[in-house]
Length: 389
Image 1 (cartoon, rainbow, N blue to C red):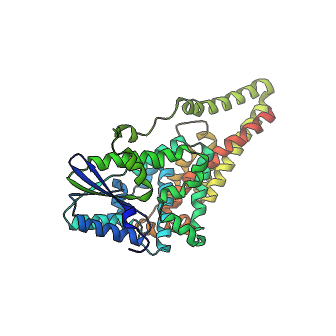
Image 2: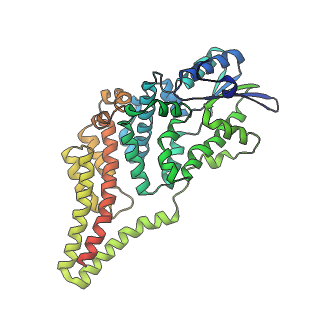
Image 3: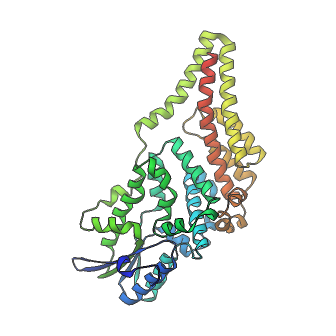
């Protein structure tokens, strides 16, 4: 089979009374999809394991799953950044797949369909993408998150410039890992979450899959790790948890507004009404201005922009509420997504214009950029207030 060496891609492992066949695939390769179909038809396994979680499985099998999205619920549950990141990742994968003239996740879809045709049970082996992303965001600071967000947005406009050499490299990598590779160079701990932890998770799930003969379809990059960990005991419960926020981050969250409030009190006490008033003024201006700029960048509704300007100075002093949540809810009310926005979502995420044009993704952009603007406004306001003091 051209482009794919079967001897290098297919690995046989015996585990007690089980025969396990691991197929290492390229996620954007027609040859990999054909190899998967050929091996499953030949082996006729009891179970086919696929490198998918429930949400990604549903996305592949149910093309209209987006129609069930409740954007208000997403905002209230503080998952706007996670959803936007997931959509950006999906966009990159789909555009690369289109460039190579294959369907996104074709090798996984082929594994599922072929497995069902030979009567095999389909077993989902990957960790929930939301847990993986949540664990990733939890260890990243504000600057790393901003860098990652802009890196993924910029990547939307660079897909057409990818040369043949880069495409060949991407054929051998996980799209999630490809997108985050640059950030991973400066944050090695990301590799632990995105690759090493998933190697462990996939290994445990494959080992526990039902049946005597199992075919597991995973990205080629995960095969070495899976083989290395195959005879180890793995605790899945730890890998499925979202780490609690550190006490330090919780302390800092309350420390900043406390310090701001203390500065203002000191300003009134030592500098008089004029100094205290000026400090309050700079706090309001800096927070409101940058939050408003964030909403403008997201092309928010005028009333949304106004709400972000008004809310930011207050929400920045309350760690329980974020300016982006307020502006996101206002945007959702002013420009309520219609059925066509949900229907067009899978196509609109393929371009920067589509991201800003679709009402669903625009709401997510409003939440994220308003929050970023408000955070930046806080850091700008502090030296301005101290200067007055």
